[in-house]
Each structure stands twice: as C-alpha cells, then as structure tokens.
Image (cartoon, rainbow, N blue to C red; front, side, top):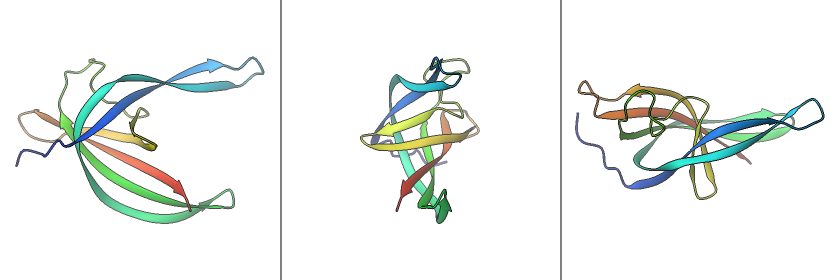
Length: 112
C-alpha cells in the first residue's frame, strides 16, 4: 500500500444523547479531537427524502490507526466535521495489512 497523503484536518465528534424532558431526546456532538486524513470521493447519487431532493456522496477517509478502545479511533455513528461539512461514519476497517492506517467509509448529505 502506498502511504496516504494526510492533508485534511478533520474533527472527530461523538453523539451525546440526552432526554429533552418531553419524552424524546436531543443529540449534541462532543469533539474528541482533530485527525489528519486523506479524503477520497467514492460514489454519489441524488435521492428524495420527505419531499426534499438530497445529494448523497460517499467517501473513503484514510487516517493513522489508533488502538481499539482509544478515543482517537473512529467508530460507526460518529462523524467527522470539516468547517461546515459533516461526514457521517458508516463503517471502519483496517486499510493495510500492518494495521498502520484505517479506512472510514462516510456519507455526506446535502439538500439540493
């Protein structure tokens, strides 16, 4: 595997779910830290949801590996933030046989 070009600074965020007092819940996002990554577009499509057109783009995000259980190791249902962009993490896998890098597969949705 060729070493990835880690040239994008992303903030890893974890969902914090709290009761809203009315029987539902609210989700706040806790920043876990900044990680350097390589971001590569995979595929995209346009879809409709609730009467709104959405552009759905999938990405492979490669970053340095962190040990299992480390707060620096991304997990599904967390997200990356880059400015106003939000990339929801769908899956995480080791990117190389030596376990030096991780591949995170993430989705970005934009209303069109």
